Length: 131
Image (spheres, rainbow, N blue to C red):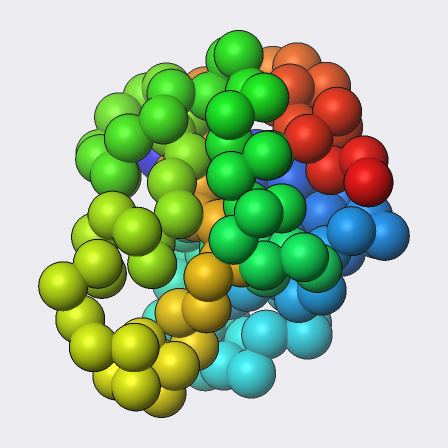
């Protein structure tokens, strides 16, 4: 878990610098609204990174479909990195209004970061992030 959390934070920091990314959510980021609370309650910040892509659902599907290393699934408990679009998977039965209130937009992508080399994960995502 420690390695997965370190990978997740490194990936989140990298994603914040990508031009096609609108917003990144990871409690280890200082930009996260509950960063201070998370750092008091957690040691590592966790292995989940969520981010909103400019371009909505179309951009999210482009990114997800171009990955080769990331496994496309809604599973969160694995040592392999998984990727999903919550609006069309885990939260597809939630009303659009409730998803919006929870911040689950069509362009939201969730990655459960695994034990792969962080540079390999970045390479896997880079083509899908290009406009």
